[in-house]
Length: 232
Image (cartoon, rainbow, N blue to C red; front, side, top):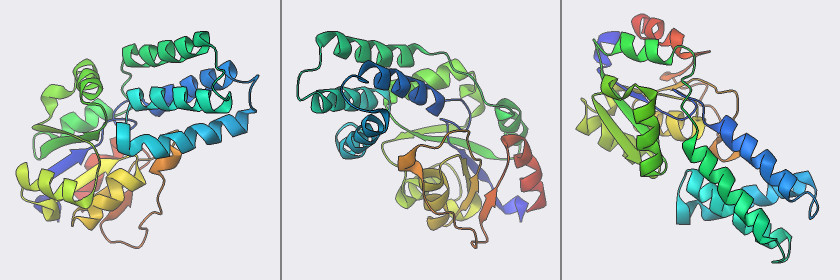
């Protein structure tokens, strides 16, 4: 069946390069800035609530995260948060936007190994400018036949992407670290969904694994992907 898979979609953040780790480090910095106003667990929960609430307004990415931190800081301090703390939060976000890209193990090798026999499509969501920056810094951009930067990943997202850049979702495979965004909707679209768990998992990206589905697979790392395709 391997010859029928003509297109492979790759997620970017925490699939090809580190991402969530920097959000965790910045959240820790945020908690320390506000530890005089609320306990750690309460701050983390309030921030997560703000992120969920704001996704529809700001979308995914660093800018929305920073705005959610500022909103949370204002709320938990009853609007008494010092301007210096807001300044620190903004500075933390700017540092995230400047952070160099670190490829995850096997990322480049896997993409290079599959490019000769498959059409490769990067399907990533988030802020357009930041995603373009990370792709440029990664050095992987020239290895992809197409890049789709989207606001959300739904079954329709994958149907459109794999129809536009391949032979439809039935002959496509999506590879990523998010069960909710990369795996489940790709399978619902009619394709394969391959989960490559990352070290950190954002609470908002959690979903139940479709363990009984015939087009679902789990890999320990991207280095196992070429063998998986060869075995299908």
